[in-house]
Image (cartoon, rainbow, N blue to C red; front, side, top):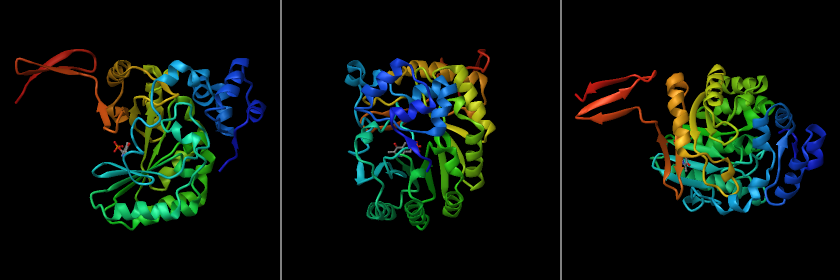
Length: 344
Ligand SMILES: *Cc1c(COP(=O)(O)O)cnc(C)c1O
């Protein structure tokens, strides 16, 4: 892994901060720490959107913002079946393998884990999770999440991937990672790419939120992942002041397609404590999506989804493009004309 920068003095060697940003850094990092790679910090210099996702802001500790949201609204920990494994849907499980991320995104859905000392899944925890999955033949898809799983020591990642490879009913292993975005160079490690290739069942979900993040370096990282045989899909979070606009998302999804990454999810911001200043109304998300459907092929339109607070799981949302009247369906076309069809 590339070196991570945590201190204000390290940051200021690479990026000049306003006095407001410096004040926020001092106050906010007492509660929510800062971390970045050199690469991503440099990207913040030319990109206001990256800056907003990266630098601490006083809003995080604003009492009004703090009052709303919860530490674990999705109840991942309540619904855990072994220490790091959440089994919510019949056929899919979620495994949290570490709480380490090279870059701490200010809108993080697992901000609760920032307070814990750094952990990496132990061999024993891997064995417990694998034993649970082995004995549940309905589980065909294992999501490996974190923190960032691509920061795991390669022997741990190898053990996990090869244990899963041996379970016949596990058909898909998904790795959720932001490393291609924040530390693309480390994706190019030969041992890592060889491991992903040999593990065979691997799909990678990246986490690009803004077109500024699609740099030549990120493109090369994605290319290497694709070459390892992993399909690459992307999960974006809808973030106020970062990407809550038709133009930005249109560009993001088109540019993702150019690097052969398919947009999979556009997540509505989860109601997490210390994150609510990034939240946009669902109504606004749907309005943006409606416009995107007029402009883009559905091949590059992700599912806009809410994740039900309380552990209800994800619900994909579509903007209404039809209504039913007198037993007939009325549809809205891409350019706003309406047509009808009988229901037969
Ligand atoms: C998101 C999630 C999954 C995977 O859901 P998909 O909709 O298939 O991407 C599985 N388990 C948990 C607990 C999740 O939060």
